[in-house]
Length: 340
Image (tube, rainbow, N blue to C red):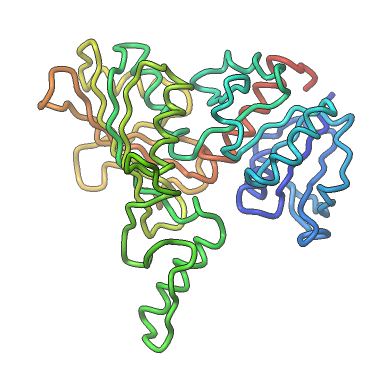
């Protein structure tokens, strides 16, 4: 016996990836409904070897459905999320709307699976920000061993984090550079993204940080440990898919780089590729389509007593969004609903 599952926002990048991953991981689906806004109504999407037609989210009845994976943004989720939850359908939301609500669990299954039982307070579970998700997968096993005091992270985030428009803008601007008669002014991003990097993701806050940087701080504290101090600099780079992060941690207890490497190799969701030679590390181009969070360049930070540096790469459309949502659905089914 399987589940009746809804995917809302099924025509977008993340929604389509959710469908792909549900099929790839053979999630026990008895019935699947794919929803979209009226402007995308009737669009066909693929689920394994099946072709499904989108239904109107505005008129859809969520009663009798077990869970709904939402990839429709905060504004639409604010309208439809409570409706689905009130109808008894557990919402797994990919937007930022509910991440900081103390009554709604924010879950990365490899890190805080025990939080799944808190879903019943509002029948909603939040999916973390893409840059946070991959980082905390790496932080948790090291924190369990040596207790992390402080994290300094610089991100190199792909344009797919800004959706299809971001990917199109990089493509169009790249072509325009080789065709000087064409001018593609920035629309999705604040400045030219082709052959450039932009140290600005989301809006600026009063303290000078951006909201993306604030999200990494707040979400790491909620998912891993509120006592961890985090400082982040988030940068958009001209890469289509795959987020990279240079991470520095300071721990309470000394942690040798070799032991850290062994710990990470044995940890769920992580693949360590760390050879001290040319090409002995993973880049975003190599992680696309993979489920794992890849760790490379593990080394001691000699400037402090208990410090480590490492490089972290993951497919942001997968672990940073769709995969984590499906893993939450698997955890919900396994630990709570117990039908599949």
